[in-house]
Image 1 (cartoon, rainbow, N blue to C red):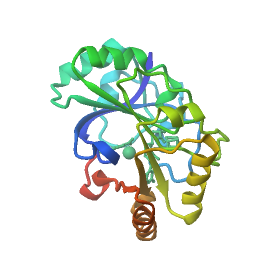
Image 2: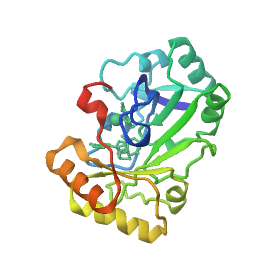
Image 3: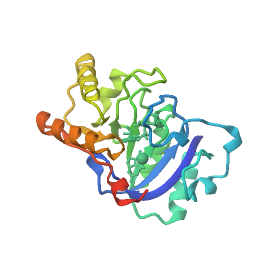
Length: 221
Ligand SMILES: C[S@@+](CC[C@H](N)C(=O)[O-])C[C@H]1O[C@@H](n2cnc3c(N)ncnc32)[C@H](O)[C@@H]1O
Ligand SMILES: Nc1nc2[nH]cc(C(=O)O)c2c(=O)[nH]1
Ligand code: SF4
Ligand SMILES: [Mg+2]
């Protein structure tokens, strides 16, 4: 069973798949503790907030309500909602606290492509074809470490930045893990002007890429 915070169809607003119509599957639970996390409502799994799957799909605002669903129920939900997107982004919370093989395999069998958004602090249990976006979380409050195995598995790295220190920590992580990723995105934290300037200047200096959270500028989910 997966713990579902919300399901919605929108445009992927971050990194390589920006602009791609996507179904977002947001899973509940994350112990990593990033102070600037934009989805804090997914951190705790409280039984008081357990609801039916329909109630997690029909959310009008962020909430810590969640529902249990199997891979089959998730597929049936996508089909019954009449979604047209064929790309599924599994995010959270921290989705890699779950074994994502069953849901990804089932979705692949039904013609969907899959992508995972992860902090890199849990082993990734997902098929080869799944696109993995690792957003490595360094020195966060929860005390979790980025695993070398997740850095190696990543198809792209997407690093939120607001200070020069964040850039240095990323380069130290590359050196420590011996991973030299082909696709590195910097994502300004919370659309701040100074963070955006830092990201632009660093991307040009290092020939990395810029990921702005397009959905936030558009005011869509
Ligand atoms: C909310 S996280 C959920 C998935 C997973 N826990 C992770 O951190 O990758 C999804 C993406 O949003 C990024 N993110 C979270 N809060 C942000 C913020 N305030 N500004 C920019 N990016 C943010 C994360 O780094 C991650 O790339
Ligand atoms: N449009 C849109 N694109 C996104 N890309 C990553 C997201 C996330 O919360 O993981 C996200 C999100 O919440 N909305
Ligand atoms: S790892 Fe992801 S979901 Fe967890 S606190 Fe950090 S940004 Fe938020
Ligand atoms: Mg988001």
